[in-house]
Length: 308
Image (tube, rainbow, N blue to C red; front, side, top):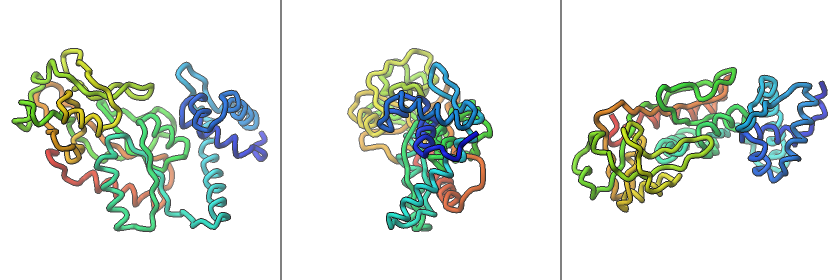
């Protein structure tokens, strides 16, 4: 085994592949060809004398040896980045935290937590990015995120089956809601029976490799008509306000809807709960990361309109 002479570029490529889930995505993100990425991974595996990735039809999965490599690669790369900052005369970032969040958490939860954090701990620097739950989980495993706010649906299984398991903390568990135009007859009340949602035109989110279509009520006893698809929540809600259809929203989103939209609870049918979970890799919790986690917990506990 000869890891002493492994170039840092190979470690960066490996971390990117582990996070992106495919060689193709990693190559595109780094501006490399796929063959160049493959050569870096092959060289790293030769140095480790072990397979670091399991090639599968839908991408790659990090092996047990690869998880060990990821943990140490994250430490090495973080130290190199810190050294580069110091040599460039930039301030140290001992209080920096990297936070990932799934799309609906960015409307209320994350901004509220960061605003409170700035008031209480102004020295802590937080960088954030949005992603699907599978992407954020891979980023935690790759060491490029410290915390991730994830969405979870029943039966609320762990976000992956890798070992060791991620540390999870439930921030909130609330019922799914439906957003309708204020001009819709349904908007006369604060709730709607699930049977009244039949035959509606829905505004959904496009399906991806990591994420299924969202936006239609999950408990419908018919195939929903998807009239529009948009990944951006504000676009979806503005389409609702324009009378183009209805969509589902998380409960904590109720305080962030634009004018022209009313959020309703749904009666009847199976209970559609949604859970917001804070995840991190196992291991010691740095103080700055703990403070961010506390701020997220406090923000999630804040009352929101129409939220029990």
